[in-house]
Length: 417
Ligand code: GAL
Image 1 (cartoon, helix red, strand yellow):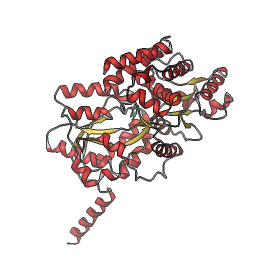
Image 2 (cartoon, rainbow, N blue to C red):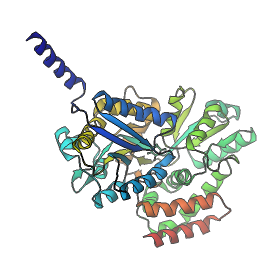
Image 3 (cartoon, rainbow, N blue to C red):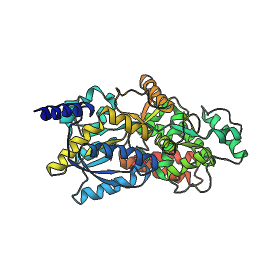
Image 4 (tube, helix red, strand yellow):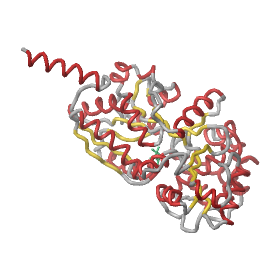
């Protein structure tokens, strides 16, 4: 009797300490592209939490920053009639797969846990299809960041993080003169597009960004503002080292860590890389938003494909619940460099870059300067995004003029629509 009482008390405690997450086993094969140091650490926290609840985790990592290789692998799996249980997927891609009838919903979990009350409405709507949750968000990543090595800046006499593109160019010229590579960059289409969208925000502002990169307005795409954006991208091209083609983004981050380069313009998954290497923000590395007074939003989420078998279906429910638990959202995001998707997770254990991200996010919502990332698949269909990536990369790797680039971009987008 005593033993039974003890066991039921223990069960009650377990239910409480797990933050209300459904107790479970279940199996989940999880397809994702988190293979760099920081990313692997972050996804490791999900695996551990899932296994701690008795679940069986089958890891399916597909290397390649930005997820382009993972999306190709996903399509092949679905075509073969063998989709993974859970897939890292985002933005319009969620809707595209849901429209094809490929996704299970997790609305029962979402209703029971009242996800609507703890997610920003803009994010919740991306996770839903036909009014039901078909995805669970793990985080909010900011794309428009500059990362810097303070020692490299000091050596070149750069006193502060740049707040305008003119200041950035001036700092970069000083670094060049001091023999330090100003900008660590990896020449892969998604990385080129990341630079491009941050520049568009900085040069044109949030309204222009929205017109050109979200609404795909032909006049905006061909405008002088777009030409000016390509001019600034051309400037940035002059600040990268000759070995940039094909380099992975995390190797560019490592160049900043070692002081071989001073800056990297990259989303805050780069911070996950610095942290995984034991670096301390404010001391070993600096963060500041790229110019523009906006906020380029990128959010990672997991979707649940149509699979059969009770064990897999159970795995999907458990994973959805776990992903949205406050405790997991904290642990995961402390490693990933992002901030929680849930609005009710306290940020006091997060660093100053994360606090800044959160404050700027609220300010951007208030001033209507929050924009979805084109490069990171939050804004437009994959097919149109592909046109942006092709053109921007061609520009970055040739001597194409800015006027020409704007016109070619507008034409390519028109053809793709
Ligand atoms: C982004 C993703 C991030 C990060 C990055 C580099 O698209 O949202 O979580 O992993 O790619 O791989």
